Amino acid sequence: MDAIEAEKAALDLVLAELGLTNKMWGSANERADASKGQLFQAGYAQIQATFDRRNRSADAFYAIPDVYPKDWSGFRSYGGDIPNIVVGVTFMIQEIKRLLMNGEDPTRLARRPDQKYNEATGMPNPVET
Image (cartoon, rainbow, N blue to C red; front, side, top):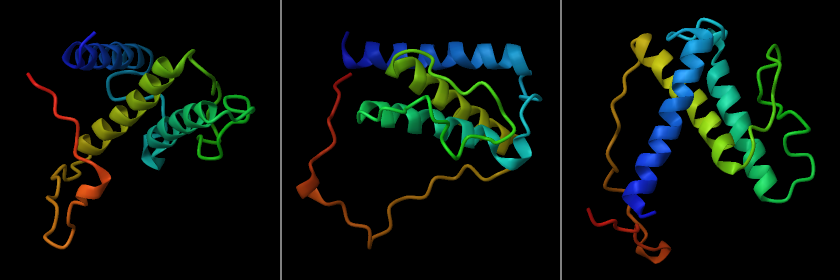
């Protein structure tokens, strides 16, 4: 699979997971107590546990990360790294959606002149289209 095919497949996986969460909880995610940022917390916890497992932590997915919402149940592994990352990203997208619906500003700031790119760290990997 080339880079573009992999990118499309990754987006398809996330969109499929979004469809599942919308079906379970409604398109505005009425299930979660979104006012406390719990979608962000759940996504971060899923990514944190995946990171821990990738770094050989014996209790990854057995010890619930502290950031996981205290009043939620069901924290678990969804399989390999890909499905766990997809679930984490999906929670993050649900949080972005909630913030947008609440009128938060999505403006991305540009790099300031005093924030120089360090070429010694390596150039981004260009992908030809």
